[in-house]
Image 1 (tube, rainbow, N blue to C red):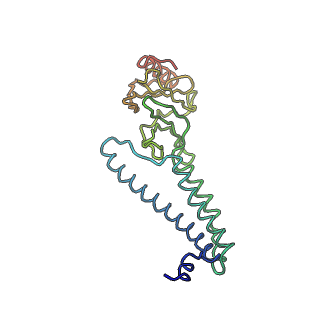
Image 2 (cartoon, rainbow, N blue to C red):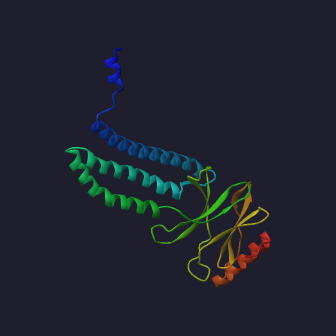
Image 3 (cartoon, one colour):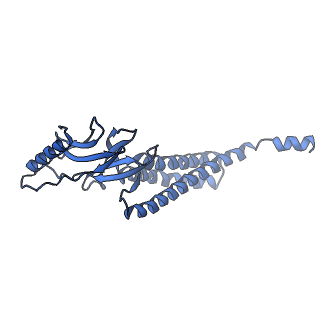
Length: 240
């Protein structure tokens, strides 16, 4: 190779070409993130079809995955549109201007849906063995709020494993925000609301297992809740 050819091989790209390459990289990175998350969600769907016939403990994207998985592609797309409008010539500049007008409301809608169309963590507790459990709110877009017990299904907590729905309380003195309590001996995980126990789980190898607490229904809901709490206290030896 001649000296002139070697210098030409090492010559940097023209300034305009570097700018165009940067914009293209941002677009490709955004597409790669969207496609990879789509494939991961399809994989979760296939796993959940198998779990439906066995444990029934479905795998769900965590709130962190939903928000970051929505925000990061939006940031890349927004940056690509802004730089495309500033750096590139027509017709790319005009296209990016139209794209920004459409992008802003769409991005706001995507973030809104990512936050509300899924479980949102309310309270968490560390469990023996290094695991954890989380109470998450499922308000189903402002209709009937429900509380769900989940646990991280992987070390990073990107995916949640749904353990059980918590006891539904529709109004009354005990319809308050639940709190998780792990017993000091590492055998029980309890849910406390307004000074009573409402749910109890046995910890097996650091994982919550639902415990059924059968109770005959009474006409007075408050009396029923207190008696059930007393039965849970007798079972676990713990007072709320």
